[in-house]
Image (cartoon, rainbow, N blue to C red; front, side, top):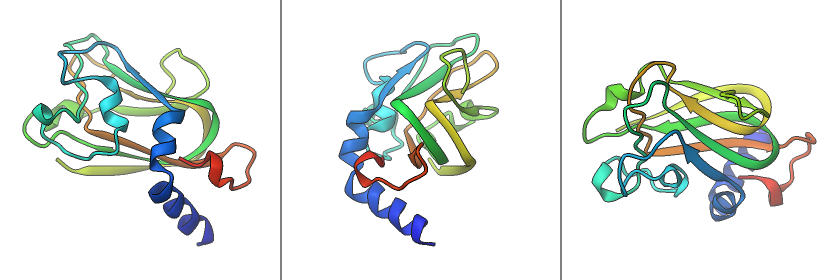
Length: 153
């Protein structure tokens, strides 16, 4: 469809703009390699020590959050998991999209969001564990319903 082509082109052409419109945080940080912002650096490298993956401590309910700085309609989220070890850490993780900060929200997996609106995209592990993500790619459009390339990420 035309929307798919537009969104794909926007994601390829304006990826740097996306990085500047969102802010990533997480429940904790294991070490200097595991910063939350690594998941939105545009690099799908799955080797943790190369510095492009996130890593929390052992938390009771670890989470990672992207603040899009405005409300958007999210159509899909693609997550690239760690590939050098520990790929099972993401098992049971949930993707939540919404407007609240209260926990709303080696290979890549895509999840369709059925046009969910929200400012925050959260990846939550609803059990004790460690959460490691190597890339999180959010696709969608401005919440007004009109395709606006300057707001696409």
